[in-house]
Length: 127
Image (cartoon, rainbow, N blue to C red; front, side):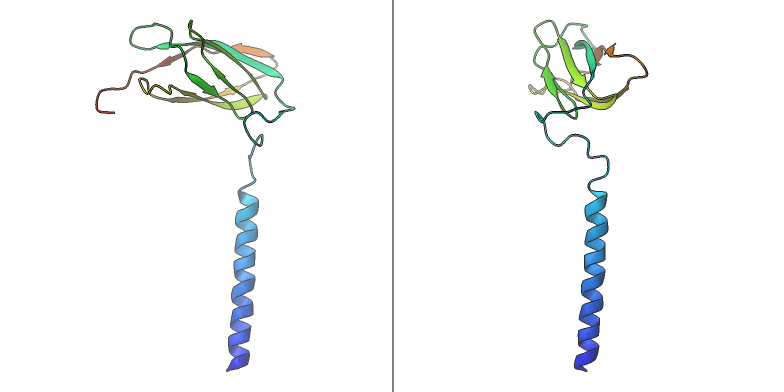
């Protein structure tokens, strides 16, 4: 009885170790840069543009523009610029909560800079 229990526990432990190893490696796939503010050797491209309201067409000040390696904030004219790698997922977020957040993917194909103008949709009262 004791040998069956020992064999079962060894098999159980081995399967747990295997599962954790697979899950641990899967968490590292497409990790990109480590943290905001960490140097990013691939950030050789420039994305710049303007963030405005879809409803009023007026620029929005203070929108967070968050990339994988860098972040920026729009100025009073709604303008921003951020250094990026050749393909990046950028998140636009209004910390005041007046506008819906927006995500976009930008790819560079030979260019070193792109102008991307964004229009954010105002939130409804119940959102």
